[in-house]
Image (cartoon, rainbow over all chains, first blue to last red; front, side, top):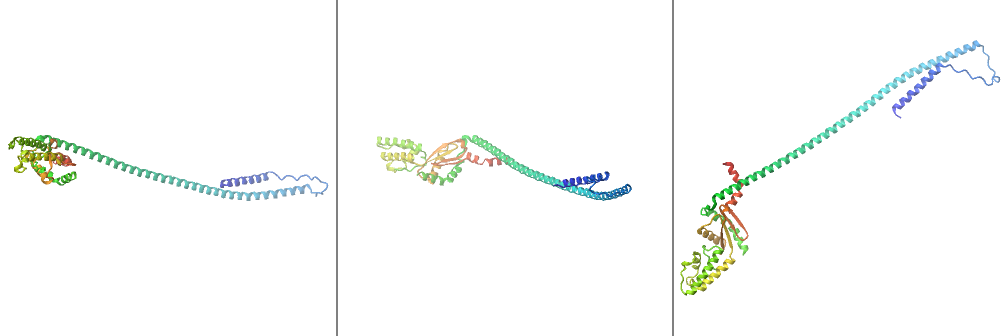
Length: 199
Length: 153
Protein backbone atom coordinates (compact mmCIF):
# COMPACT_ATOMS: atom_id res chain seq x y z
CA UNK A 1 0.00 0.00 0.00
CA UNK A 2 1.42 3.39 -1.01
CA UNK A 3 2.01 6.51 0.96
CA UNK A 4 -0.90 8.33 -0.65
CA UNK A 5 -3.30 5.55 0.16
CA UNK A 6 -2.26 5.58 3.84
CA UNK A 7 -2.72 9.31 4.00
CA UNK A 8 -6.15 9.03 2.36
CA UNK A 9 -7.31 6.35 4.79
CA UNK A 10 -6.01 8.42 7.73
CA UNK A 11 -7.94 11.47 6.54
CA UNK A 12 -11.09 9.39 6.02
CA UNK A 13 -10.86 7.96 9.53
CA UNK A 14 -10.32 11.44 10.91
CA UNK A 15 -13.44 12.71 9.18
CA UNK A 16 -15.49 9.83 10.53
CA UNK A 17 -14.38 10.59 14.07
CA UNK A 18 -15.15 14.29 13.69
CA UNK A 19 -18.58 13.58 12.26
CA UNK A 20 -19.35 11.14 15.08
CA UNK A 21 -18.37 13.66 17.73
CA UNK A 22 -20.42 16.43 16.15
CA UNK A 23 -23.46 14.16 15.86
CA UNK A 24 -23.09 13.11 19.47
CA UNK A 25 -22.98 16.74 20.61
CA UNK A 26 -26.14 17.76 18.72
CA UNK A 27 -28.49 14.93 19.74
CA UNK A 28 -29.28 14.27 23.46
CA UNK A 29 -28.87 10.76 24.80
CA UNK A 30 -31.90 8.63 24.05
CA UNK A 31 -34.30 7.93 26.89
CA UNK A 32 -33.94 4.58 28.58
CA UNK A 33 -36.17 1.95 27.12
CA UNK A 34 -39.36 1.23 29.01
CA UNK A 35 -39.10 -1.51 31.51
CA UNK A 36 -40.78 -4.58 30.10
CA UNK A 37 -41.52 -5.84 33.53
CA UNK A 38 -42.22 -2.81 35.66
CA UNK A 39 -43.91 -4.78 38.24
CA UNK A 40 -41.06 -7.23 38.91
CA UNK A 41 -38.31 -4.60 39.85
CA UNK A 42 -39.17 -1.89 42.32
CA UNK A 43 -38.17 1.56 41.06
CA UNK A 44 -37.00 4.35 43.44
CA UNK A 45 -39.39 7.14 43.57
CA UNK A 46 -37.86 10.63 42.94
CA UNK A 47 -39.58 13.84 43.04
CA UNK A 48 -39.84 15.67 39.77
CA UNK A 49 -37.64 18.48 41.07
CA UNK A 50 -34.87 16.13 42.12
CA UNK A 51 -35.21 14.24 39.00
CA UNK A 52 -35.04 17.38 36.94
CA UNK A 53 -32.03 18.63 38.84
CA UNK A 54 -30.21 15.33 38.45
CA UNK A 55 -30.94 15.31 34.81
CA UNK A 56 -29.60 18.83 34.44
CA UNK A 57 -26.46 17.95 36.38
CA UNK A 58 -25.89 14.83 34.30
CA UNK A 59 -26.43 16.78 31.12
CA UNK A 60 -24.03 19.47 32.25
CA UNK A 61 -21.41 16.90 33.25
CA UNK A 62 -21.83 15.10 29.99
CA UNK A 63 -21.57 18.25 27.97
CA UNK A 64 -18.47 19.30 29.89
CA UNK A 65 -16.84 15.94 29.26
CA UNK A 66 -17.77 16.12 25.63
CA UNK A 67 -16.47 19.68 25.38
CA UNK A 68 -13.20 18.66 27.01
CA UNK A 69 -12.84 15.64 24.77
CA UNK A 70 -13.73 17.65 21.76
CA UNK A 71 -11.19 20.35 22.65
CA UNK A 72 -8.46 17.75 23.21
CA UNK A 73 -9.41 16.00 20.02
CA UNK A 74 -9.32 19.32 18.16
CA UNK A 75 -5.86 19.98 19.44
CA UNK A 76 -4.75 16.48 18.53
CA UNK A 77 -6.40 16.92 15.18
CA UNK A 78 -4.62 20.21 14.60
CA UNK A 79 -1.30 18.67 15.57
CA UNK A 80 -1.96 15.62 13.44
CA UNK A 81 -3.06 17.80 10.58
CA UNK A 82 0.06 19.89 10.91
CA UNK A 83 2.23 16.82 11.00
CA UNK A 84 0.34 15.37 8.08
CA UNK A 85 0.72 18.61 6.16
CA UNK A 86 4.42 18.71 6.93
CA UNK A 87 4.72 15.07 6.00
CA UNK A 88 2.82 15.60 2.78
CA UNK A 89 4.98 18.61 1.93
CA UNK A 90 8.08 16.64 2.78
CA UNK A 91 7.00 13.63 0.79
CA UNK A 92 5.88 15.75 -2.10
CA UNK A 93 9.14 17.63 -2.04
CA UNK A 94 11.15 14.43 -1.91
CA UNK A 95 9.12 12.88 -4.68
CA UNK A 96 9.39 15.97 -6.81
CA UNK A 97 13.09 16.24 -6.10
CA UNK A 98 13.63 12.58 -6.87
CA UNK A 99 11.60 12.80 -10.05
CA UNK A 100 13.43 15.97 -10.96
CA UNK A 101 16.75 14.29 -10.27
CA UNK A 102 15.75 11.30 -12.39
CA UNK A 103 14.57 13.66 -15.07
CA UNK A 104 17.84 15.58 -14.96
CA UNK A 105 19.82 12.35 -15.07
CA UNK A 106 17.74 11.17 -17.99
CA UNK A 107 18.25 14.46 -19.78
CA UNK A 108 21.98 14.34 -19.04
CA UNK A 109 22.25 10.76 -20.28
CA UNK A 110 20.36 11.64 -23.43
CA UNK A 111 22.54 14.70 -23.94
CA UNK A 112 25.70 12.65 -23.42
CA UNK A 113 24.43 9.96 -25.78
CA UNK A 114 23.62 12.63 -28.36
CA UNK A 115 27.09 14.15 -27.93
CA UNK A 116 28.73 10.73 -28.25
CA UNK A 117 26.67 9.87 -31.30
CA UNK A 118 27.39 13.24 -32.86
CA UNK A 119 31.10 12.83 -32.15
CA UNK A 120 31.06 9.39 -33.70
CA UNK A 121 29.23 10.67 -36.76
CA UNK A 122 31.69 13.54 -37.04
CA UNK A 123 34.66 11.17 -36.75
CA UNK A 124 33.20 8.85 -39.37
CA UNK A 125 32.47 11.79 -41.63
CA UNK A 126 36.01 13.08 -41.25
CA UNK A 127 37.46 9.66 -41.94
CA UNK A 128 35.22 9.23 -44.96
CA UNK A 129 36.18 12.67 -46.18
CA UNK A 130 39.87 11.89 -45.81
CA UNK A 131 39.41 8.58 -47.57
CA UNK A 132 37.58 10.24 -50.44
CA UNK A 133 40.23 12.92 -50.63
CA UNK A 134 42.96 10.28 -50.78
CA UNK A 135 41.08 8.42 -53.51
CA UNK A 136 40.53 11.58 -55.50
CA UNK A 137 44.17 12.62 -55.17
CA UNK A 138 45.33 9.15 -56.20
CA UNK A 139 42.96 9.15 -59.17
CA UNK A 140 44.04 12.63 -60.21
CA UNK A 141 47.68 11.67 -59.85
CA UNK A 142 47.15 8.56 -61.95
CA UNK A 143 45.26 10.50 -64.62
CA UNK A 144 47.95 13.17 -64.65
CA UNK A 145 50.63 10.51 -65.00
CA UNK A 146 48.76 8.82 -67.84
CA UNK A 147 48.27 12.13 -69.63
CA UNK A 148 51.93 12.99 -69.25
CA UNK A 149 52.92 9.58 -70.55
CA UNK A 150 50.62 10.04 -73.53
CA UNK A 151 52.06 13.48 -74.20
CA UNK A 152 55.60 12.11 -73.92
CA UNK A 153 54.74 9.21 -76.17
CA UNK A 154 53.14 11.45 -78.78
CA UNK A 155 56.05 13.86 -78.69
CA UNK A 156 58.50 10.99 -78.94
CA UNK A 157 56.66 9.50 -81.87
CA UNK A 158 56.49 12.90 -83.55
CA UNK A 159 60.21 13.39 -83.04
CA UNK A 160 61.03 9.93 -84.36
CA UNK A 161 58.80 10.41 -87.39
CA UNK A 162 60.40 13.78 -88.04
CA UNK A 163 63.93 12.38 -87.79
CA UNK A 164 63.14 9.34 -89.92
CA UNK A 165 61.47 11.48 -92.55
CA UNK A 166 64.29 14.02 -92.51
CA UNK A 167 67.06 11.44 -92.81
CA UNK A 168 65.25 9.21 -95.30
CA UNK A 169 67.63 7.49 -97.63
CA UNK A 170 70.32 9.98 -96.91
CA UNK A 171 71.49 8.36 -93.72
CA UNK A 172 75.23 8.50 -93.78
CA UNK A 173 76.28 4.97 -92.89
CA UNK A 174 79.92 5.89 -93.21
CA UNK A 175 79.54 8.31 -90.34
CA UNK A 176 77.83 5.55 -88.39
CA UNK A 177 80.68 3.09 -88.86
CA UNK A 178 81.85 3.32 -85.28
CA UNK A 179 78.28 3.07 -84.01
CA UNK A 180 77.74 -0.09 -86.08
CA UNK A 181 80.96 -1.73 -84.92
CA UNK A 182 80.25 -0.74 -81.32
CA UNK A 183 76.83 -2.33 -81.60
CA UNK A 184 78.34 -5.56 -82.88
CA UNK A 185 80.95 -5.46 -80.14
CA UNK A 186 78.26 -4.95 -77.51
CA UNK A 187 76.46 -8.11 -78.59
CA UNK A 188 79.50 -10.21 -79.45
CA UNK A 189 79.07 -12.61 -76.54
CA UNK A 190 75.33 -12.95 -77.16
CA UNK A 191 75.90 -13.70 -80.85
CA UNK A 192 78.57 -16.28 -80.12
CA UNK A 193 76.36 -17.97 -77.58
CA UNK A 194 73.36 -17.89 -79.89
CA UNK A 195 75.27 -19.47 -82.77
CA UNK A 196 76.89 -21.99 -80.43
CA UNK A 197 73.45 -23.04 -79.17
CA UNK A 198 72.31 -23.46 -82.74
CA UNK A 199 75.25 -25.69 -83.55
CA UNK B 1 86.18 -29.22 -99.10
CA UNK B 2 85.58 -26.21 -96.90
CA UNK B 3 86.57 -23.12 -98.86
CA UNK B 4 88.07 -20.15 -97.08
CA UNK B 5 85.54 -17.42 -97.53
CA UNK B 6 86.73 -14.01 -98.71
CA UNK B 7 84.97 -11.08 -97.02
CA UNK B 8 83.59 -10.05 -100.38
CA UNK B 9 81.49 -13.20 -100.26
CA UNK B 10 79.02 -12.78 -97.45
CA UNK B 11 75.35 -13.58 -98.23
CA UNK B 12 73.60 -16.86 -98.97
CA UNK B 13 72.33 -15.60 -102.32
CA UNK B 14 75.80 -14.43 -103.21
CA UNK B 15 77.32 -17.80 -102.28
CA UNK B 16 74.77 -19.64 -104.42
CA UNK B 17 75.37 -17.25 -107.31
CA UNK B 18 79.13 -17.73 -107.04
CA UNK B 19 78.68 -21.51 -106.88
CA UNK B 20 76.70 -21.38 -110.10
CA UNK B 21 79.30 -19.07 -111.60
CA UNK B 22 82.11 -21.50 -110.66
CA UNK B 23 80.10 -24.37 -112.07
CA UNK B 24 79.88 -22.61 -115.40
CA UNK B 25 83.52 -21.69 -115.18
CA UNK B 26 84.52 -25.31 -114.48
CA UNK B 27 82.56 -26.49 -117.49
CA UNK B 28 84.37 -23.97 -119.66
CA UNK B 29 87.72 -25.16 -118.29
CA UNK B 30 86.79 -28.79 -118.97
CA UNK B 31 85.57 -28.00 -122.52
CA UNK B 32 88.54 -25.97 -123.61
CA UNK B 33 91.25 -27.99 -121.88
CA UNK B 34 93.19 -24.82 -121.37
CA UNK B 35 93.22 -21.73 -119.23
CA UNK B 36 90.13 -19.57 -119.17
CA UNK B 37 90.32 -15.86 -118.54
CA UNK B 38 89.17 -15.20 -115.00
CA UNK B 39 88.35 -11.59 -115.82
CA UNK B 40 84.84 -12.69 -116.69
CA UNK B 41 84.31 -13.84 -113.12
CA UNK B 42 82.78 -11.62 -110.48
CA UNK B 43 85.19 -10.24 -107.87
CA UNK B 44 83.79 -12.64 -105.25
CA UNK B 45 84.21 -15.66 -107.55
CA UNK B 46 87.69 -14.52 -108.52
CA UNK B 47 88.62 -14.05 -104.87
CA UNK B 48 87.30 -17.49 -104.02
CA UNK B 49 89.10 -19.09 -106.92
CA UNK B 50 92.27 -17.41 -105.72
CA UNK B 51 91.98 -19.36 -102.45
CA UNK B 52 92.77 -22.58 -104.35
CA UNK B 53 96.41 -23.63 -104.75
CA UNK B 54 97.85 -22.17 -107.94
CA UNK B 55 98.03 -25.54 -109.68
CA UNK B 56 94.38 -26.38 -109.09
CA UNK B 57 92.73 -23.13 -110.24
CA UNK B 58 92.42 -24.48 -113.82
CA UNK B 59 91.39 -27.99 -112.85
CA UNK B 60 87.76 -28.82 -113.25
CA UNK B 61 87.54 -31.32 -110.31
CA UNK B 62 89.02 -28.83 -107.88
CA UNK B 63 86.64 -26.14 -109.09
CA UNK B 64 83.70 -28.53 -108.85
CA UNK B 65 84.73 -29.50 -105.33
CA UNK B 66 84.87 -25.84 -104.48
CA UNK B 67 81.37 -25.39 -105.88
CA UNK B 68 80.03 -28.28 -103.85
CA UNK B 69 81.64 -26.82 -100.77
CA UNK B 70 79.88 -23.53 -101.44
CA UNK B 71 76.47 -25.16 -101.84
CA UNK B 72 76.96 -27.09 -98.62
CA UNK B 73 77.99 -23.89 -96.91
CA UNK B 74 74.87 -22.09 -98.15
CA UNK B 75 72.72 -24.88 -96.78
CA UNK B 76 74.35 -25.25 -93.39
CA UNK B 77 76.21 -22.09 -92.45
CA UNK B 78 75.07 -19.84 -89.61
CA UNK B 79 73.45 -16.69 -90.96
CA UNK B 80 73.29 -13.27 -89.35
CA UNK B 81 71.08 -10.55 -90.80
CA UNK B 82 72.07 -6.92 -90.44
CA UNK B 83 69.38 -4.28 -91.00
CA UNK B 84 70.60 -0.78 -91.85
CA UNK B 85 68.79 2.46 -92.60
CA UNK B 86 70.34 2.78 -96.06
CA UNK B 87 72.10 0.54 -98.50
CA UNK B 88 75.68 0.04 -97.26
CA UNK B 89 78.67 0.34 -99.51
CA UNK B 90 80.60 -2.80 -100.51
CA UNK B 91 83.46 -1.67 -98.31
CA UNK B 92 81.22 -1.34 -95.28
CA UNK B 93 79.64 -4.72 -95.98
CA UNK B 94 83.05 -6.36 -96.13
CA UNK B 95 84.17 -4.56 -93.00
CA UNK B 96 81.14 -5.73 -91.03
CA UNK B 97 81.44 -9.25 -92.41
CA UNK B 98 85.12 -9.34 -91.55
CA UNK B 99 84.39 -8.25 -88.01
CA UNK B 100 81.74 -10.94 -87.56
CA UNK B 101 83.93 -13.72 -88.98
CA UNK B 102 86.84 -12.61 -86.83
CA UNK B 103 84.95 -12.14 -83.59
CA UNK B 104 81.94 -14.45 -83.75
CA UNK B 105 82.39 -17.35 -86.16
CA UNK B 106 84.77 -17.75 -89.14
CA UNK B 107 82.40 -19.39 -91.59
CA UNK B 108 79.20 -17.44 -91.18
CA UNK B 109 77.14 -15.67 -93.79
CA UNK B 110 75.66 -12.20 -93.53
CA UNK B 111 72.50 -10.94 -95.13
CA UNK B 112 72.09 -7.18 -95.44
CA UNK B 113 68.64 -5.58 -95.41
CA UNK B 114 67.62 -1.95 -95.77
CA UNK B 115 64.85 -0.41 -93.63
CA UNK B 116 64.71 3.42 -93.60
CA UNK B 117 62.20 3.30 -90.73
CA UNK B 118 64.97 2.54 -88.25
CA UNK B 119 66.44 5.98 -89.01
CA UNK B 120 70.00 4.86 -88.36
CA UNK B 121 72.12 2.44 -86.40
CA UNK B 122 71.74 -1.28 -86.84
CA UNK B 123 69.40 -4.15 -86.05
CA UNK B 124 71.15 -7.52 -85.67
CA UNK B 125 69.15 -10.69 -86.13
CA UNK B 126 70.77 -13.95 -85.23
CA UNK B 127 69.18 -17.34 -85.01
CA UNK B 128 67.15 -16.76 -81.89
CA UNK B 129 67.54 -13.10 -81.00
CA UNK B 130 67.11 -9.60 -82.33
CA UNK B 131 69.40 -6.89 -81.01
CA UNK B 132 67.94 -3.52 -81.86
CA UNK B 133 70.55 -0.76 -81.79
CA UNK B 134 68.71 1.47 -84.19
CA UNK B 135 68.27 5.21 -83.74
CA UNK B 136 64.53 4.70 -83.73
CA UNK B 137 64.54 2.35 -80.76
CA UNK B 138 67.04 4.58 -78.97
CA UNK B 139 64.77 7.58 -79.46
CA UNK B 140 61.69 5.69 -78.37
CA UNK B 141 63.46 4.37 -75.31
CA UNK B 142 64.37 7.91 -74.30
CA UNK B 143 61.05 9.66 -74.79
CA UNK B 144 61.15 11.09 -71.29
CA UNK B 145 64.58 12.52 -72.02
CA UNK B 146 63.21 14.05 -75.19
CA UNK B 147 60.56 16.00 -73.29
CA UNK B 148 63.21 17.14 -70.80
CA UNK B 149 65.31 18.41 -73.65
CA UNK B 150 62.27 20.18 -75.06
CA UNK B 151 61.70 21.79 -71.67
CA UNK B 152 65.22 23.22 -71.73
CA UNK B 153 64.79 24.71 -75.19
